[in-house]
Image (cartoon, rainbow, N blue to C red; front, side, top):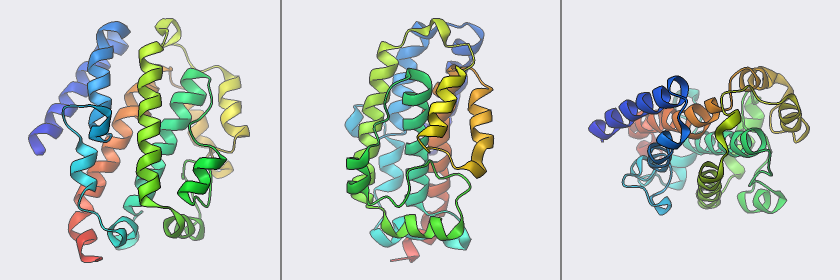
Length: 222
């Protein structure tokens, strides 16, 4: 697994160079699709699924365990998936989120936001209420939508900063808590291309790394 993670990191640096220095989206796209598939289920069709390798051993107790007061695996996957859904669809594509009232019922979600700056009691409630099975199904749906957006993206504005009305839409849909307004400033202060480099790829990779490091403690939760 370690050699594959190192290869993923090297590929990320290459994609960043192609996108941000060469500004060549069409050249980056096939690499980006492979890169994105690695942080999702193998059902997306990638050659390697880091997500499957990391999450496959988790039991229900392991999903919800929060060793040392850290966020649980279920929170990390919820957070990474909500961030991808919000930034790719509301921010980059200017379209609807995958998340809906129907998905909220399936998930048993106690909130609708991406999870930054949650109060401890809200985090605990979400940790108890979420269905891991439904979360993986929602994550797969988000991953499929992202790939559709990437394949149909017109890159002419990719290096511009997001339109203010798209940031405002995220706020109106309560996808970010008032306490986490710094996140809106961060998204709004970086070009659209950043969505491809962080929320859609690097961000879930970081959280999968965290879960991987937590695994010895998570196994003890059973």
